[in-house]
Image (cartoon, rainbow, N blue to C red; front, side):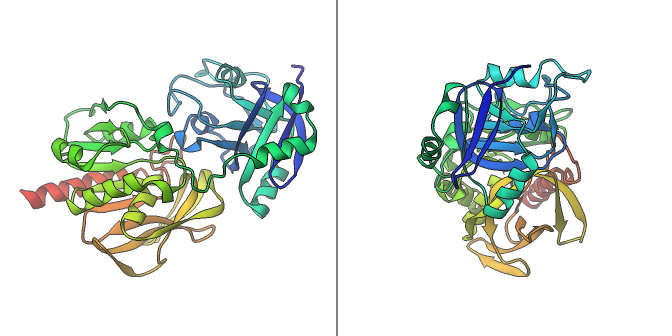
Length: 377
């Protein structure tokens, strides 16, 4: 395939020249890297990647094409896509379409034939930053004009993106087999596999918009409330924090993942902060402090909860503790309340496209609801 020139421009002035990949034009976002060797379709369709330009560190991307089963939503959410060596063919029995053609169809601008490992090292040393990709006529502009265009875009700090990704209307994912529990899942950017994992455990999942109120939850009277993953700065998510506080006060069992972990942290009176370059990919080592077990987990987060790494601390809802930490940098990866039925993790236990070390967390959510039901009997 004959490709035109494309430029990747970082806000610090670094410009990398490569070739156009996907749609032609320009895009802007936060430059982040994903360390997964596979799972690019799940990454592209994860709403948590809203307004991010994803750099894939694995050199060969697109070889398995895309299919109709692995998408985590009904569209691609990344702002742009960066790969080193795009596959010329799709070679997998499940493939129903070509990756690049899907990028073109959904107007996702990308770049290829650049050193993605060198770019990743640059982001690790200097941190995630604003970026633009330019191809076609946009790539003919002067370098200083392109840098200025990137600098004129918004930072991820202070970004409130929940309204852009949440469902517009409630929907239900039915339990598989005999229904055991009903869960209200607050959609802050939920992945489609998450309610499936709950449904496999006999849970009827009502996926609700982020605008859902405490009064609506009370009327629904679910057995538990789930707060999903999602994009943006948790410091802007005041409505979700207010809802979380009301759910905790009502002593409804709570499970939060990723953005939901940050929301629980804020509801407990903890702060959040932006990581230098975040955790992304399907190979992040996390230790469960209760058992000492190390799990390989799937991540996508650029913010974290600021909590004491050891010991029990007091919150407006009683005692709590950090349950999991990242072994790469000691970032808090999980919270557990000791006086109300609530816990959360900073990663993605639904683990599409793997690994599956953290699937037990859905069973713990079931156990939490069982315990609350027995206590109320």
